[in-house]
Length: 272
Image (cartoon, rainbow, N blue to C red; front, top):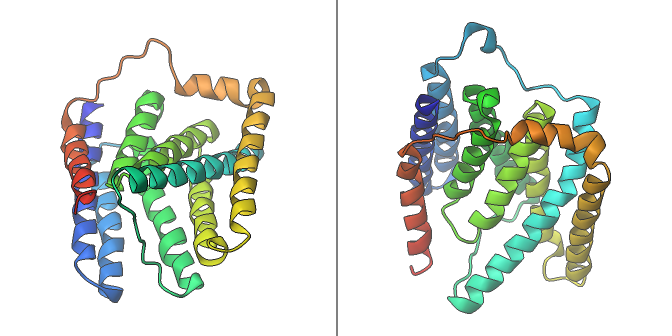
């Protein structure tokens, strides 16, 4: 399994490098480099991975009725947690270090949905959910979950985004593993991005801001209650399959090659 983990690490390092390259350009060229920076490492990783012939077919791309229920329940839990964490981390960094983050989204809501909601969801879910499940998957669901979430969070290389990206990554992969499909995380990722864009373009700075924020938090709490109520029926067996008691985890040192530079970038960005 170390070989697969090393391959994932090198794949994500290539993606990280491509993000910096795309940031050096503007317009359509930047977008093309951004897309290729995800697609090419993804294809390279699949080509280099020693996947048995019977597992090379397109798996994890269907969703059962039970999976749809779990996905719907996870949606507002995810959005509620991410909104609260995003707000708290922004406040903490603003009032302790005096830093804030401005994200350029442009003036077109439709274009923002494509570039900042749909495109990241498709590309990132292919790399951070489908690829780890395909390479490691059932051999060690716990390692798949933790590595996927950790890499996903660190790729954002910003302390404004790492906290909620880590939680989102854990929820994305956990739901995928419970449902045996990557479609739930794709739906959750796109929906979370879309709601964030609605907040930024329409709600933020208006009288609707506080009711919107409270509603999202309340729906998240309600989803958590539903998860507890239906724990035995829907979740317990699936969660037990992810967290195997007594399983030994051997990831090696390769993930540090990704973790250390991304954390260094996150720290330096606070003071630049």
